[in-house]
Figure 1 (cartoon, one colour):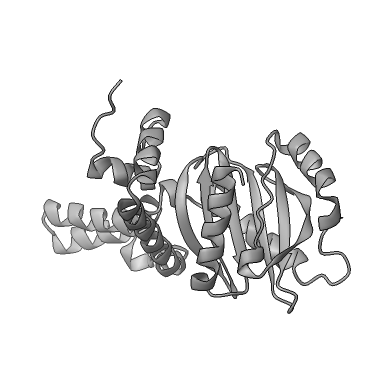
Figure 2 (tube, one colour; figure 1 turned 45 degrees about the horizontal axis):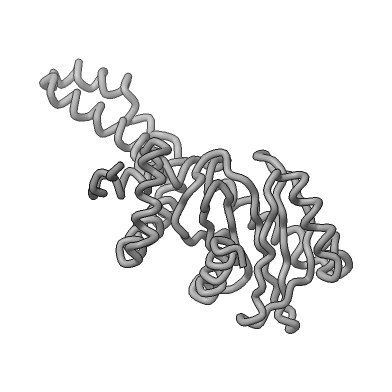
Length: 258
């Protein structure tokens, strides 16, 4: 069966998480064979993250009392404003209160869902374990078969353990962690100079196929993506541009089964 041509609306719907599963899979396959368009879609993701960072503080602020609806109605009674101007004011209030949530729906949902949740969980894991000099991992790299069996039993999927030696990082080991969305596998890497990276992977209930996108919390930056129902997030105390090629290497290994 021939696939309908992929339109610009389909690409935006893919970023926003607005497509049904069948169309989402078709768009995902299209992006895999059109890297220049996939790069543009990644750019959309970065723009949305920038918007999120810029708008979150404003969205959390209470609406000034002078702008609430009852106050505007009282002003109308006093000044006898035309009805259309009152309607316009109401629209402004709705846009101010809801634009952030609408513009960032889909891939960039409210905290606690999809890719946002995955990025938060990876960052929290890094904050908890990366600085631990006594027991940063529960199972060391010389016993990875045990960790793979444990992760497979808990997640229902056999994980790939990426080899980052070409990037100068060795696998220290890992542990299973509990998240609000089920069990996740945390792997930790070290460059033998004290720089540690954490990769978190787990099955995704939503955002099952998502292009790679950057994120940042404090001094921890990272890249997150999803493919075939599994989510991946690489984080560390490094600039995003230094983490990006490492994340690309991980994505290639997990998608090829290397």
